[in-house]
Amino acid sequence: MSLCRLIYKSVASTKIVSNETLRDLEQRSLANNAANDVTGLLVHEENKFVQVLEGSATTVTALFNRISSDKRHQDIELVSFELTSSRLFSNWG
Image (cartoon, rainbow, N blue to C red; front, top):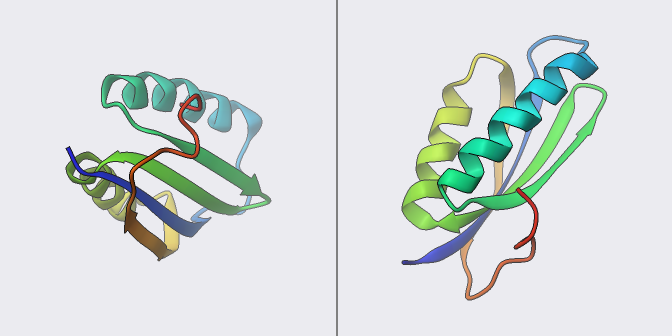
Protein backbone atom coordinates (compact mmCIF):
# COMPACT_ATOMS: atom_id res chain seq x y z
CA MET A 1 0.00 0.00 0.00
CA SER A 2 1.30 3.44 -0.95
CA LEU A 3 0.69 5.84 1.90
CA CYS A 4 -0.04 9.41 0.88
CA ARG A 5 -0.97 12.77 2.33
CA LEU A 6 -3.35 15.07 0.47
CA ILE A 7 -4.14 18.64 1.54
CA TYR A 8 -6.93 20.70 0.03
CA LYS A 9 -8.85 23.84 0.83
CA SER A 10 -12.41 24.78 -0.04
CA VAL A 11 -15.23 27.17 0.69
CA ALA A 12 -18.62 25.98 1.89
CA SER A 13 -21.33 26.64 -0.66
CA THR A 14 -23.58 28.11 2.04
CA LYS A 15 -22.51 31.13 4.06
CA ILE A 16 -23.31 29.67 7.46
CA VAL A 17 -22.36 26.14 8.44
CA SER A 18 -24.31 25.18 11.56
CA ASN A 19 -22.83 23.35 14.53
CA GLU A 20 -25.40 20.61 13.95
CA THR A 21 -24.20 20.15 10.36
CA LEU A 22 -20.59 20.00 11.52
CA ARG A 23 -21.39 17.44 14.24
CA ASP A 24 -23.21 15.27 11.70
CA LEU A 25 -20.28 15.55 9.30
CA GLU A 26 -17.86 14.62 12.08
CA GLN A 27 -19.82 11.51 13.09
CA ARG A 28 -20.18 10.23 9.53
CA SER A 29 -16.54 11.01 8.73
CA LEU A 30 -15.24 9.22 11.83
CA ALA A 31 -17.08 6.04 10.88
CA ASN A 32 -16.18 6.19 7.17
CA ASN A 33 -12.55 7.11 7.79
CA ALA A 34 -12.07 4.32 10.34
CA ALA A 35 -13.57 1.80 7.89
CA ASN A 36 -11.21 3.01 5.13
CA ASP A 37 -8.08 3.54 7.30
CA VAL A 38 -8.06 7.28 6.57
CA THR A 39 -6.67 9.73 9.11
CA GLY A 40 -6.24 13.46 8.97
CA LEU A 41 -7.23 16.86 10.18
CA LEU A 42 -10.06 19.26 9.33
CA VAL A 43 -9.80 22.97 10.09
CA HIS A 44 -12.88 25.14 9.75
CA GLU A 45 -13.23 28.91 10.08
CA GLU A 46 -16.43 30.69 9.06
CA ASN A 47 -17.16 29.03 5.71
CA LYS A 48 -13.60 28.00 4.82
CA PHE A 49 -12.08 24.56 5.22
CA VAL A 50 -8.58 23.11 5.06
CA GLN A 51 -8.27 19.35 5.28
CA VAL A 52 -5.41 16.89 5.46
CA LEU A 53 -6.22 13.32 4.38
CA GLU A 54 -3.83 10.42 4.97
CA GLY A 55 -4.17 6.84 3.81
CA SER A 56 -3.64 4.66 0.80
CA ALA A 57 -3.20 6.65 -2.40
CA THR A 58 -6.16 4.88 -4.02
CA THR A 59 -8.50 5.51 -1.09
CA VAL A 60 -7.46 9.12 -0.53
CA THR A 61 -7.72 9.95 -4.23
CA ALA A 62 -11.22 8.44 -4.41
CA LEU A 63 -12.25 10.36 -1.29
CA PHE A 64 -10.91 13.63 -2.70
CA ASN A 65 -12.80 13.00 -5.95
CA ARG A 66 -16.04 12.54 -3.97
CA ILE A 67 -15.36 15.70 -1.98
CA SER A 68 -14.60 17.60 -5.19
CA SER A 69 -18.00 16.69 -6.65
CA ASP A 70 -19.87 17.45 -3.40
CA LYS A 71 -22.13 20.47 -3.97
CA ARG A 72 -21.48 21.64 -0.38
CA HIS A 73 -17.95 22.67 -1.48
CA GLN A 74 -16.85 25.30 -3.94
CA ASP A 75 -13.50 26.81 -4.90
CA ILE A 76 -11.75 23.52 -4.11
CA GLU A 77 -7.99 23.76 -4.45
CA LEU A 78 -5.54 20.89 -4.16
CA VAL A 79 -2.69 22.26 -2.05
CA SER A 80 -0.47 19.20 -1.84
CA PHE A 81 -0.34 15.51 -2.70
CA GLU A 82 2.68 13.48 -1.65
CA LEU A 83 3.68 9.92 -0.96
CA THR A 84 4.92 9.47 2.58
CA SER A 85 6.28 6.77 4.84
CA SER A 86 4.38 7.87 7.95
CA ARG A 87 1.24 9.65 9.10
CA LEU A 88 1.19 12.97 10.91
CA PHE A 89 -2.31 12.33 12.28
CA SER A 90 -2.30 8.61 13.00
CA ASN A 91 -4.67 8.96 15.97
CA TRP A 92 -7.06 11.45 14.34
CA GLY A 93 -10.11 10.20 12.44
